[in-house]
Length: 456
View 1 (cartoon, helix red, strand yellow):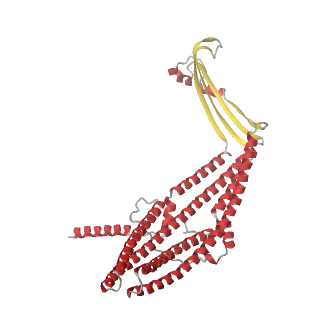
View 2 (cartoon, rainbow, N blue to C red):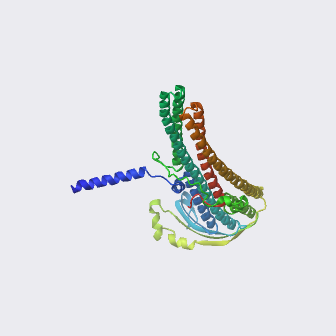
């Protein structure tokens, strides 16, 4: 009995968890965070950041000495000079050589220093690029999220309108039986109900597609039961509309990531020019070299190791290696005189890239100013449109209630009543559209003011 109770408890628990998982509704914050963690474009930007870090390691490595070792062993079979008598004779001789070289840049026209500075700037640019990608994804998710909310409310309106018309159809049947309205009016109401059914189906499809779009944006593999929470708060919580466009623009100059990217790219272009100019200057390198060699004759390949203990007619291996060792060190100065204009052309190309970067900063500044003032105007217009739609809905609702009273007593035909009903439905849809349009425009304005969609 206890065992059956335990099994029932486990089953009920798992079933409850399954139902809970299916009924989970995502908040905007959850959607944005999940998208940032799983979006493919963001993962690619993260790889760009890793590449920038690797490039910095390479730039640091330019300051370190280079160390290379070499070794070789060869057999000469046939007529060779005897290494002890100097006479030519048929024999097998072996030669072994080994060495090591160390080189270090003492002066290279400050190219190594500027390359390191450029690598640091590239890391900053990669971070800004990743942040910009996150901000764009957040804005796209917010737009898709609000589209779902809009379609939800629109579906609700269409269903309510269908329910009203179905009740009106029943009421019209009674009026036809009572002789208050002609049968043609009943047919008009029936056609209206059929049209309402089509509108409900279209609204339901639009809602499904909007959910699918957001689920795909989040890279969700299972999205059949995907849904979001209903959040229709239209308040300007951050009081962004009390700000002036100039104040928002000044704030955007400090915070906007795209402007930071353009400025960082300008600094990178300046470093590229300095690196290119550095090739005009002389370079000074220090070097150190160590080498030694060993040679012996009449030693078959399979017996060559016996030379290590000096059993043949030449000195032992390690004795020769020690006796023949040599060292060299010094400095090498290289002065560029003519290189087919390659250095000069690189400098000219870097100058052109620098001018492009300067223009990009100016263009980004102009675009930002235009976008901020446009966003403010759009948000203000969206608010006015929403407020006007509220007034219009109140008027349409009053007109519809009055028309319904007249229709119920036979003082209005079905065509005029349907017209009043259509105008009411349009007013309801318009208030939904303007509401979510205003919410999104506020999000964009906050975006430029430095207020993120969510904190991440």
